[in-house]
Each structure stands twice: as C-alpha cells, then as structure tokens.
Length: 310
Image 1: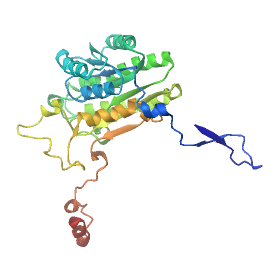
Image 2: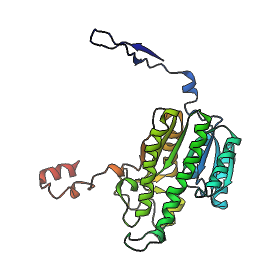
Image 3: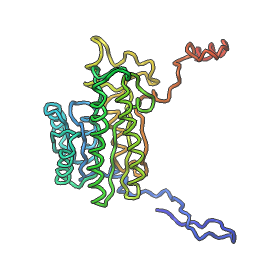
Image 4: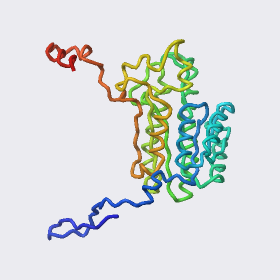
C-alpha cells in the first residue's frame, strides 16, 4: 500500500506523482512469504546428496513442486528418495544440461507437473584431473566450459523462453563460485566459465526485467559436500585449513540452499541481477589474518600489540 505525494516544481507543484511507502504488509505475505506453493521449479544437477539435493529439499519445504534433474541415475535417486521422504511433490528426470533437446523436454515435463516458476542451475564442477596450467595443451578446458557454462546457457534459455511465453514472470538462480570473482590459478576454465555465468546473469536480469523475470546468482565459497570430501587427504576434516575463512568453518550444502531459496522466492521480489556470496566472508577478507600478518608497510609495533591483545 502506498500514497501519492506531490513533489516540488518551479511553481511549487510537480505533475509527477511521488510514491511514499506506508509500511503496510499483506497478511498473505506473512502467511506464505515464499510464494512457491503449487509452482514447479527445475533443479539441474540435483543429485548426489550435496548442494543440488539440499536446494531441492528446501524448495520442496517451501511448497514448490520440484523437478530434480541429474545425469547420473544413482545420484538422482539420492535426491528423489529424500524428496519422497519429505512428502514433496516431485519428478526425477535423467538429462544432460549440455543437450538442448533433453533440456527442452525437461521444461515440458515441468510445466505438466505444475505451472513453471523457474529453475536453479547447479550442474557443474571441476575435478582434480582437470586442473592444469593454462599454458599447457589442456584437453579438459573445453569440457569444463561446456559443463559449467554451456549447460547453464541451455537451461536458462529454455526455461526463460517458457517464462516469457507464459507472461507471469518467474525466477532463475545460477550457481557460480567466488573463484569467478577472485580468479583460480590452474583452474582457469572453471573460473572463466562461472564468470561467464555471472555476466549472463546480469545481462538477462536487464533483458527480462520488464517481464518480471528475475535472474540472480549464488556464489559458494568453500563448501563441505560429498564431492569435495573425495578430494581431501585421508584424515582431513572440515575444520582443517579454514584460517583463510573469517568465520573459521567451511559452509554446508544447506547454507547454499538457504541463499537459493531466498533468491527463488518472493522474499527477494525486488532483487535481480545480483550475486550472493555464501562463503563465510572469504570474498571480502584482506590479505592478512591477524596482527602478525599485517602488511609489511605497517611497522608500528604498538599498533600490532594492541591488535594482538584484542
């Protein structure tokens, strides 16, 4: 609810109405702040019990009908079993986001399940064998780009096209990484692909904004998932090597899912083109941890001692 408020002009009046918020809140917004009830959301890369599965479950608990998609049948079952246990209306589909025809079929089936709200693009990643110096003849570079950027393009285009046709607005959320902001030596393909995802996010938020189609991204930092656990040394725990994280812990899949739920729901109804970093503060930390690591040009010992005591 708002009221028009005149503004000043040369003659003391203003023909352009000014809007003044009254702070009124609809009871329906308080009762159901998510706005996802009875709508379908596609989650590409939903399987495996990690980020995609957590996102699917949080969306389901908020009332969405979840279309869980993965390329791996065994991993997909982990997600669909969890959704079934939660009592979530859902559909599990095997599809490769790099296959345009397969993605188009996913969108058709999502619309059959319930009116389409949008999609979350999770599919992606980079595995240790794919890390390589950029100057080398890296055969995995194109594969990493195709999985992380190509699959996102295919899904966002197919879902976005359908949302435009429906004319009711919608939401899309792309999973990126903080490495897209800071760089990733020896993982340049992954960083570049996710940086492209962020640029696509911003561009489409403008292109589709007038149609009330919101496009945002969530950028995870260091997250403890089944996939990341497989890359650690025996005996490593989630508490190891967290000194570079201001909150001194790795994130969880649920941390990411909560950010995605916010972006996909009416809780962020006036948010578009944004990147939410869910990284425990890593993306904004300075290049030092404490007083012992202050930049070399800070030679004031009294200052160092005072900070150390704090």
